[in-house]
Figure: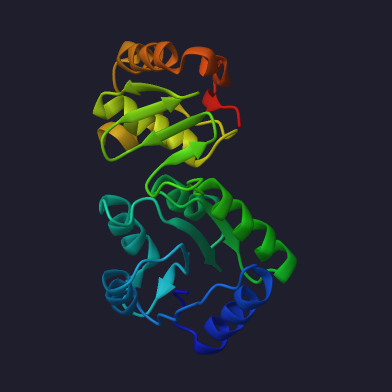
Length: 221
């Protein structure tokens, strides 16, 4: 629980202790530096992250979480008073699984936390993204489709990971280019070619990967 306001940190940790079954231990971090120390010290299932901290923006920590192979699959829920559209978009584009404005109710927090934990559930094998019948190992690009194994190229695996982390969410071409290639845009046929190959490797599950004309792409859950 990363929040530099001790009473708020304690409150959210109290909420966590009362809504997850079996109970989860929660660890407070009152700064970015404290959060980094905790992440280096132990393994976690999720990070609840404020944006405005005494030693920086929580997005800095989010970027480091997503760039580290040991933490990049962590569920991350941003809980912040910074709720302007551009702030929310920034948080999601940098890899947050969800963004919740505070103050919020315990019921809303419960629902959002359950959702991000479910999105990052691995169904038994550490490191896997997906659901039974369709799972990706981001570490080596292996794709498991109904027991069949396909091998994805690195960019293909990065694209599919975006969809698996947030199924049923429409992702624009610009967002995919920025996330996968680090650029705002690129040749349209480059992305389309990767998606075409992905659909072929998805086999019987290919129909779940949809093109939404004029908007982007999504993976049906």
